[in-house]
Length: 139
Image (cartoon, rainbow, N blue to C red; front, side, top):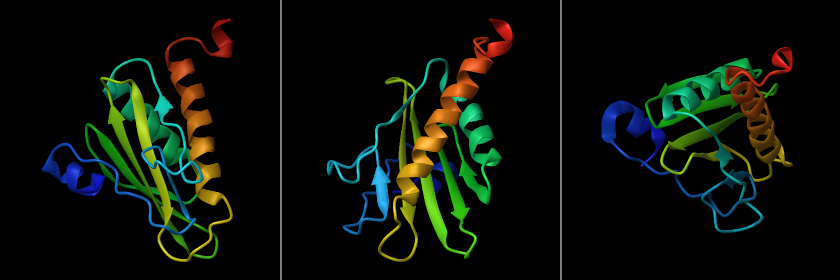
């Protein structure tokens, strides 16, 4: 079940598995070539979701398609019109956000999905630090 179903009220959903093609990364994938670390956070699940939504909205050609208390589903469009699907699941008890980023079509992604996840991770960590009052303006 995808986060889109969860956002529609279907309850606790997990991320779908990555296909065998090398155009997907996930924090839930056991294969090291497709695995990325989940994104850690401190604070409430709601604070994490709000910050993550702000980060996704700030990225070029990104659209949030669904959002709920535990998940966000977004689409990223390349300049050539290709669409990548990115899903996040917030695990408040563990203090992490699980993530999956996959190309909708094609076989190779040339590392685009992994780079996107790392950009989101870095930006999210900065946003959370600023929101907690640890930004450079408070030093």
